[in-house]
Amino acid sequence: MNKILMLTLAATLSMTACTKKQKVEESTLPTAANADENANGDSDNGKAMGLQTVHFAYDNYTLDAEAKSQLKANAQILKDKASLKIQVEGHCDRHGGIQYNVALGEKRANAAKKFLVSLGIKADRITTISFGKEKPLDSSETEAADAKNRRDNFVVTSR
Image 1 (spheres, rainbow, N blue to C red):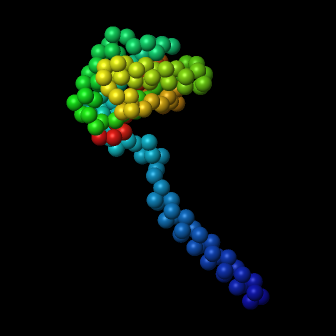
Image 2 (cartoon, rainbow, N blue to C red):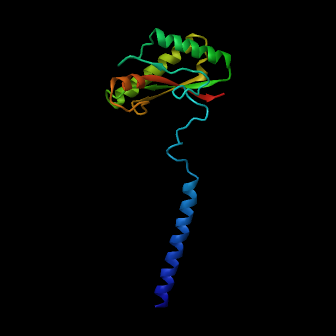
Image 3 (cartoon, rainbow, N blue to C red):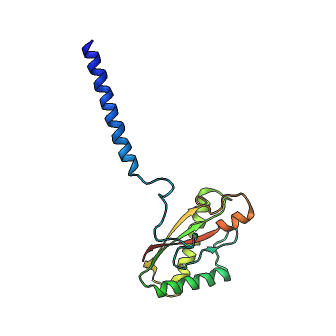
């Protein structure tokens, strides 16, 4: 009987110790709410030192006159702040498959990078990534939401 009591007590103590350790480790992990936050800001939230988000027409990665104007303004900010580095995030709307939208988002991000480089910004200051349709600004299933989601977001990666 004493052996059973001792084994039960040992098991209880070891489980309690593991539970406390697990709670301490969990408290040091980032939460889902802040895991993707960028301390330097991005153009979608208006905290990217004046850089502007660029939008695209449906199923397109061609820069229209408005996008080129916004990119010229972004290039001026990059020229004025020579140490600034950015990442261009290509995004798509809810239509189309995952692979198609990742490829389209990449084309959008690369179109913006190519245009900024043509304006005199060094290519090594700009990285690109595509999120396809995985990070919408507006998850509503409307045409207005789709238009908001077809974009290049500019993220400050280094000041």
